Image 1: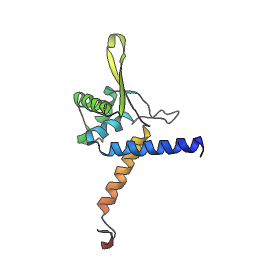
Image 2: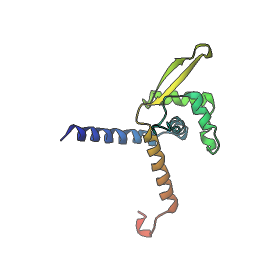
Image 3: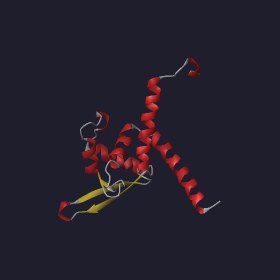
Image 4: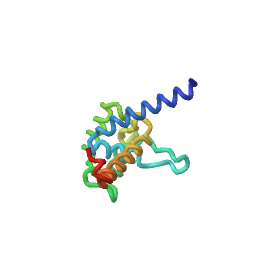
Length: 139
């Protein structure tokens, strides 16, 4: 067994454990995580992090966002605090001189896993809405 193999297995285990936690989250928490990971660097294709709570708010207020995800500033701060307590995000305050301080937020895990969660949920929802293909699939 090589170091590469061990690293790959460790990452796969960590990914599944994290996705398991994410699947248990309320919609508001998932919405904040999606907003945190919504923007990409055009040059590298990487998710842009850290983000501010203002940026999370702007994304959640955008066109096409379901009403259940459109949270106010206070609700976003509460969700971020909850996610931090769970160990899913890391936060810190950054001073902007006269402009005050801004809370910076980033995921404590690979940010693309949020998109994997969305894909899993969409696929599962589509599977449920189509129903079983035959009576044999109903247990």
